[in-house]
Length: 310
View 1 (cartoon, helix red, strand yellow):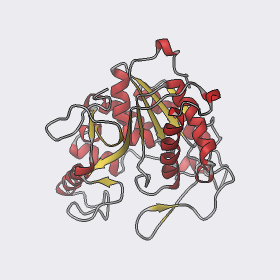
View 2: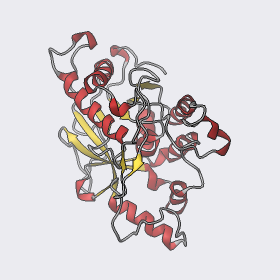
View 3: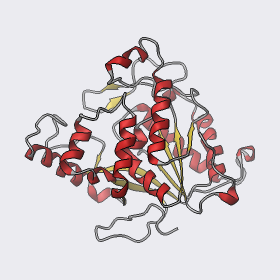
């Protein structure tokens, strides 16, 4: 990890992303991160846990699982480092330091979304003290001084407790960091001008599913009907505020995804959809604005730059 440069050397425009586990950042924002790095903007990633409870898709690495050697977090730390190299991101931190907060795990609710697991580790992120965790992020906010923050919505996309907690910590820390009299030992106050929540376009998702079905693929994203109800993480287009086109960075995003080998298989539905629709489909990353005024809009009524209007 490389810390942000001194204030007088930092890029004029700076983006901070707060994610729950290694690989979340590459899936949702990989193209955005790579594009902004290429444009000379500052990109800082904060990951809240080591992803210790993730499923392992590589049989030879199953011994790293939480129910055996419990060393998956350290392995995923390396995967994340490789993903950041692929995206060109040099400023990456773990909230409170690596290992401070542990992946809480999850289980599936009968309604199809994630919920907290029955048993939690003593330092599970879901059980973290909100103010303590937020203070760790306040210090980073005041050091980096980002104009834009990206995190999850209040449901964490699909209900994962760590995603929900990351949302809570990010939103609370953004408020605390701006208070002139709050914890000056954590740095000079800084107000983030714009906050966005990750989103997935409903129309793009339906388009991708139709392309898969038209190509004869009936198994990828099984159970998702292109014309029927979609999962919780899909956002109606009328709720979208911005789209970042990282088409020129699509290869970098795919390389970052491939780096997370224990979590993402290159012959799985994510990559299958990419091959059928074209990698540029995954290079369009959508957002909902949660704070700030939108800048110039395109013909679809969306910002095309998260820094628009600043």
